[in-house]
Image (cartoon, rainbow, N blue to C red):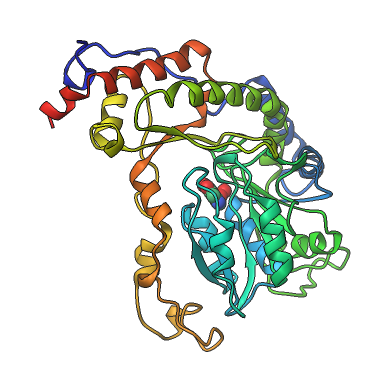
Length: 413
Ligand SMILES: Cc1ncc(COP(=O)(O)O)c(C=O)c1O
């Protein structure tokens, strides 16, 4: 019996994992080029990046912005979401998905997710549609596209806008078409942890030219596009990207395809190997997904199915074996204090304001799958998937060792 590293034994792995972000002289030269050009603000690099990224996703138009949260807000506002409109979003996502709805003065309506994909459960979404529902925001979670066939059908039946939270899905495709412009518009993030990054950054994609023009004006202080500089037409904001960000992102985009292929190959290996450990469930794939990114690699670990230690103890033991992983979100979004607060008055708008005409009570929301996933998920950062097959073998060996010696975890619990 091997002694677990958490109990002082020798760890499966001591070597470092691939570092993130990846960069080389390409980024260095690109940054210096912008610096020396003195064109630090909205110029050629942004235009080039907008065109290149939109083309990569198969969208007609791209508008670069300062981050993913702003990309979603811009898309929602320009799709006409306003005071008191309900917007269906998954309960298992990052806060930014809900923030964008709130910033548009909309009311987030939390929907449960599928246990085997962690994506919006479109059947559950159908039950949440009311006369106030104006849009739905599918999050292509961890890079796996949501079931867009079902979602498009739902949106068409109820005349809902689809704004994709594509902040994890650079390169992902649904039936051959890239995410981002599968619905009306979609937003991407290029924050540091993301699979292409400039530290911060974002872009909105759309196939709709008029919508693209609205978005471009919104993120540029509500200006018109060909009008005098100090003419402002609508409430917008300054959500512009810098030339430095665009220059780095152009270089990062050049590596994306090769990196995405490597992550996908390693994820397929892990799916096959890790699900051989009792209690460990790989997530489902869908053959309509013709390419996908892996922003996070995840499995579900169900201690009760395998006489195993609690999830967090299992994770601590994996960490000690030299495998970095964690449990991800501790609670579905609706459980955060922001949503659990009660009251009325302007500070509670848009959740209880005259424009809404109703009061949203998030204390009554319960999404059982999202709750369960918060207890059962194990997350691995995307940088691990840039490793070699031997690196993936270390992850598998760590799982086998921890599970095989689980009695030691109980003894020391
Ligand atoms: C699902 C999701 N949506 C939106 C965002 C917001 O992106 P940003 O951090 O660039 O504002 C993130 C960022 O982590 C995210 O994970």
